[in-house]
Length: 249
Image 1: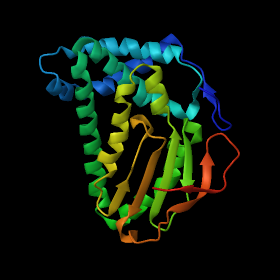
Image 2 (image 1 turned 135 degrees about the horizontal axis):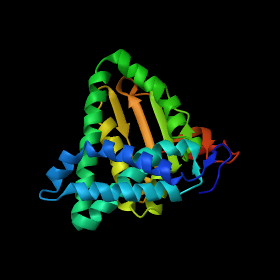
Image 3 (image 1 turned 180 degrees about the vertical axis):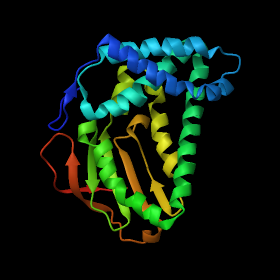
Image 4 (image 1 turned 60 degrees about the vertical axis):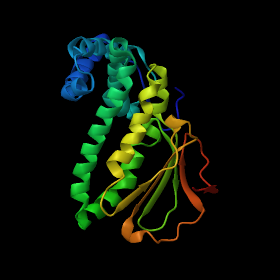
């Protein structure tokens, strides 16, 4: 992947480190084994998880030039779940895809329920919203392998487009792109039903769009003036350009 001005690239891991990390990540995914068993009755999952561990080790020791900040995404989510899906697909064929989709949905809904309980309290809801922009820029910004456009928005509103995404790029690279959109759907399951908060999206890169658009707002600020054209306040794509305006959906 091409290096950007703010993204430090990292090499592939040694075999020993890759194997150690793969074992750790598979143990985490093994906690979902009961859910997979429910989706795939009668399937012996142990050989699948062992195969996934070997696949993950191979990915971690062969794929290099990963932005340092993107390692959180590749090492914890993209490569482990991609490896598990590919191992599952070899055994279960077409049944692997809906199984992965349902388990991913279950986990996102669980996250949403927990977050929703917290956000039912207005002070927590306001704190969540206040922290959203800095957390997004840190975890989903240029140094993490993303390219973003952040828009000026009224108080209580957040608007951002992602135009480059490591989930899109790396799922393609490892041959598991068909599960990439499940991570887009997870946003809607996790944030789409929070009390006092509205999350809107019209398209994603992983579903053929030109961007992943985010519009989140506190319901108490629903009637704020959101115009059809919003000022671009920051562009993070490795370029020096950060000016002008862009159309909004």
